[in-house]
Image 1 (cartoon, helix red, strand yellow):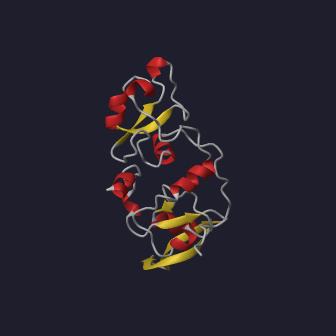
Image 2 (cartoon, one colour):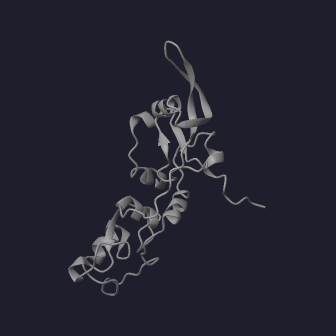
Image 3 (cartoon, rainbow, N blue to C red):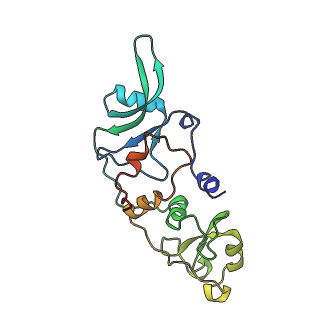
Length: 194
């Protein structure tokens, strides 16, 4: 149920259902963890043909043209490094990711919406520091009242996340499908157990 709910936030083009390629930056880290940086196989083949990426791993499946036969790439690495963004966009998805897809009042991860901690009717602004993920029940219960008036408390105070922090948070939510050739590149810097 939880993974089903999480993936409903990610729009998946039909072409990503079959043989998607994991896209790594020039430092061999994924461009993003959640949503995972994936290209349709057609884009990966095109980028390889245009010499924009190196193919690191391949599927067993092949595609053919009249003059060429190529294995479909499963992992590609960009030849030019893409500098990660320093600022995190204030979006509903990033807000839910920051709050780990949990209501910040009761901790459930049912159908989420967002709530202004200080209601807009009381001068609250729409910002990282005043908006949290909330389930519909808690949001309705709080209404336009303060936390104290509604008898609610926050699991953690809202704050602006850093770009690296949000990327690392995304690693906690792997996609439903991980091809065997991707695993080493997704968790290569994870701490090993003793």
